[in-house]
Structure formats: C-alpha cells, structure tokens
Picture 1 (cartoon, rainbow, N blue to C red):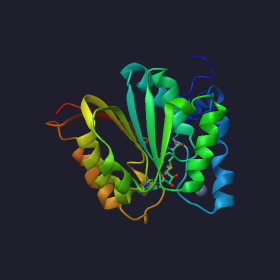
Picture 2 (picture 1 turned 90 degrees about the horizontal axis):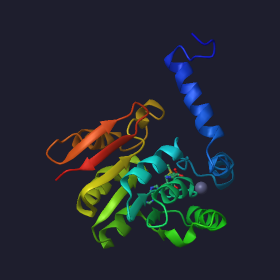
Picture 3 (picture 1 turned 90 degrees about the vertical axis):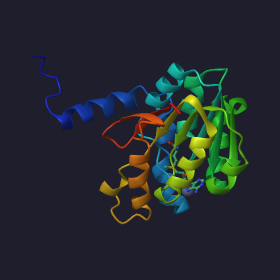
Length: 212
Ligand SMILES: C[S@@+](CC[C@H](N)C(=O)[O-])C[C@H]1O[C@@H](n2cnc3c(N)ncnc32)[C@H](O)[C@@H]1O
Ligand SMILES: [Zn+2]
C-alpha cells in the first residue's frame, strides 16, 4: 500500500480538508471569517465546511432558482451560484446588515453579483413574503429558527427540488446552544419518507429531495 494512504478516519478527514482547501477557489473568503468574528464580536458566522460540495450539488441539480438561508459573508453563496452556472439565480437571506454588506462586496468582486440577491432581515420575516418554486434551498442558520425555516422550505421548494441542511449536529461543538431540541426534530422530520428522500453525512450536513 502507498505509504501516504490515509489509514484512519481521522487521517481521511485530514486528507479531505487539506485537499478541499487547497483547491477551493473561494477559500480566501472562508479564511476571513475568523478575523471578522473577532472584529465584529459576532459568534455565529462560520463558512460552510465544503463549498465545492455545494457547487457540485448545484451543478448536478441545475437549479434556476436558489434560496440560501444564512448568507454570512458570502462564501457559500458564491459556490452555489458558481455551481448553478449562468442560468441560476440565488436569493440569500441575512439578518446582519454588516454581514450582508460584506457579502455583497465579495459577490461583486467575483463578478457574481448579478446572479445573487441579498435580502437583509430575519429569515422568519423574509421567508413569508417569498413565493414558491425554488429548485434548491440551502439552510445554514441557528437552531432556534430551524423548524420555522423547514416549514417554509416545505412550502417553497418544488417537488424534486433539493434541500441542503447544515449544522444538524451542533450539540457536539456547543452543547448549550439554544434550540438544539428544534434541530433534533428537524433531523427526524427530513427523514419522513412520505415527503423527503434524505441522505445524511456524518459532519452534520444532509441532502434531501422533496418527493411530495
Ligand atoms: C453559519 S453563518 C452562514 C454562513 C454562510 N452560509 C457561509 O457558508 O458562508 C449564519 C449566518 O446566519 C445569520 N443569521 C442567524 N440567524 C438568522 C436569522 N434568523 N435570519 C437570517 N439570518 C440569520 C448570521 O448573522 C450569520 O451570518
Ligand atoms: Zn459579524
């Protein structure tokens, strides 16, 4: 066996992280989040752990209308828009005005701002105004609003559309974070076979197709 072959789960994880990072065209932006948190004093803005995975899913699903809940500083939105290609249009929701401004600047710097629209406001206020027919929804905000967002995702996602959910096992990093009981219910609701076809990844990401 080749001596560099990863031989444990931890070594595989290190391999995946190293090679994902070194080939990630938007990694420079993911790298800015930590300094931003220190400067802004916010605690819940982290880049999704695998932007290229989002892009690969978007490229396969060929979505025209994409919705992201939790824009952050723009990293995941760039990857979704990049993967969806020129026919895709992403709407992304962000509660923090400062995050939204930084994200818009990044979208512009990458020349993808015409394909990404940032809505500033709490998701629970923005979502009720949106009309259905989205092809892909990416959920990436705090547990407290997770079930409200899932209700809306069930309304907004077309049959056959893709729901990508992040942070479904946050309790391992932050056991006291509010809303974990809602995430627990969210995890089970997307396993309802009458409505969803869901595959889980052990990092806390799930991929669900709306079947009904
Ligand atoms: C985990 S970060 C999103 C990271 C982003 N998806 C990425 O990968 O680059 C969560 C973001 O959601 C925002 N947020 C938290 N609660 C929210 C809510 N109720 N409505 C809208 N945005 C919210 C936070 O301000 C933060 O910027
Ligand atoms: Zn911040």
